[in-house]
Structure formats: structure tokens, C-alpha cells
Figure (cartoon, rainbow, N blue to C red):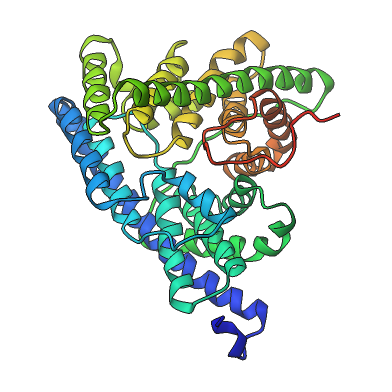
Length: 406
């Protein structure tokens, strides 16, 4: 029986209470994760020899998932499937597994992100409330999505974008209005909790914005097409390489061994290879305040696709930010636009195309760079979304309608 049928809470108060719990759980988990991630990133910088252990570390994580993580290896795709066809509670073991897997990937030098970890931990922890309170399927679905929103928001410091992203990536359609309140409350509370517990978010400055006019808008739209094509290439590289590994390397333990060995060779033979290992935040920040190399976006794209396809845990969003911002910085002089400005548009637009979330990506740009970028970000994200193809970074995502239906 639904627990809430016999309580005096109104639906609104019910969701306020649940959102507070979800926000505290997800925000606390994200704060701990961010602090640990900072530590392992510093260790990797101090002890460069750790890269040699990447293949063995990848095998260890793959073995842990095989031994203890049955049904958990799908990551965010597991969460998307559960929101459409609820079958069983998201296993609590998903949280420590993805936390350990992501920290291990970053400690030893894989090129992966971090949002997947926070989103999975937020959803796994929140879904335990569904099990404890014995809620119905509809309520449980919203709880899982609110946990995803809280994890995303507390990781990047973007509560509104976190709420919109969780709803948009699941493609809730008619449920969107009902899910907005718990997603937004959970995201805001999680972000506040994470900040109170010492989490720090990276800030970027987009600099001066060009005055609104038909020429800047036309140039941003054109760059949005380029961002969308790159996003399409990123998704194709991840899915294509993953299929290649599954076809030719049947043993899941050998995939990170082979993938890690290739990354070690890359790190040892390529000049400036450290720019592309781990999160790559120094290069991402340089896209707004310094200089980047013309090949940075392409090298990061390829190394991230290879790392994720071969089984290393983490996420795709921060690498997508890196790819978009560095590409925008490179394109800006060709279009006679300020590099920090187009880097900001690119950061949001490549993510919009790869994740099929143009609304959330626009809100991310506004929360990170200010309201003045809103029109440009919306245009760049829309153009990127339209040309990026139907399949994004999440294989389980289902678009309700074609992108260009006439």
C-alpha cells in the first residue's frame, strides 16, 4: 500500500519533505565525491608514474562490477530504463561501485568525466526512499529523476539546469510539469548541502558579449552547426568503439586492460598528453582566460571516447564541456567573435547536441555565464541539437519526436 495514502501530508508537503531528503542525500554524496576527486587529481599530477597502473586499475574495476555489480554496469542507461519501465529498486551498491570506479579512473589517468558518478549516486540513494516508503510506480519514477537532478546540480553548481536536464534527458512529456517541483527543490537543496560541506565548483568568465544583431546571431548559428557535428562525432565514436570492443574482446576484464595500455602508450609518446588525461580542467579554464591548441578538442574527444568505450567509469559531460569550449575558442578568430564568448556557447552547445538536452544546456550557460548569453546560447544549442543526430551519449534515451518533423 502506498505509504502516503494514510498520512496527513498534502501532495505538496509530501514532495517538499521527499525533496529535502533527496537533496541532503545527493548533496552529501556529491560533496564527498568532489573532495575525493580533487585529491586523486592532485596525486596523479604529483606522481606521473601512476599512469602505468591504469590497465591493472581498469581490470580491477571491471572485476568488481562483474563480481558485485550485477545489473549496475549500465550506469545512467539503467536509470533511464527504470524511469520508463520500473522493475526493481536501483541497487544501492551502484553508489560505492561508481564512486570507486570513477576515482580510480581519474587517479590513474583515464580521460573521463564526473557527472555520471554524481547522477548515479543521487538516483541510487534516492531510490532507497522509494523502497523504504513503499511508494507507487509514478512516485518512484519522480523520486529517481529528482535524485538524478540533485546529483547533476550539486556537481556543477547549476540547480535550475540540473532540474531541467533530468526531466529533458528522460523525455517525460506529460509528466514534466508534475516532476518539476521535486526536481527543482531536490536540485537546489543538494547544491546548498554540497556547498555547506565544502564542495567547490569551477567558475568561468565569458567576457564581453557582442551586441545583439543579425550578424552575431548568424555567426553563432553557423558555429552551432559545427558544434552539433562534433557532438555527433563524439557520440558515434563512443558507440562505435564500444561495439568494436564487444565484438572483438568478449571478456569484459580485458577491455580496460587493452584500453588502458593504449592510453599509457599515448601518454608516453604524445607531446602535451597530460592536457587530455583526467578531467582536463586547466585546459578548459584556458579556453576562457588563455590560449588553447587547435588540436585540443579533437584529442580530448578521441581519448574520452576510447576511455569510456573500453570500460573506464566517470561520465561524458565535463569532457564535452572541454571539447565545446576549446573548439569555440579555436573557431572564434575565424568568425571575428571574442574567444571566451564563443567558448561559452560551445561549452553548452556541444553538450546540447550530444545529450539531446538543448533546454537544459541553455540554462547551464545562463547559470554559469549570466543572463546576457541567453539568446546566443539558446540559438547555438538549438542548432547543435538539430544537426547532432537522433542518437546521443545515452543509448537508452528515447526521443519522443523526430528533431526535424515537418
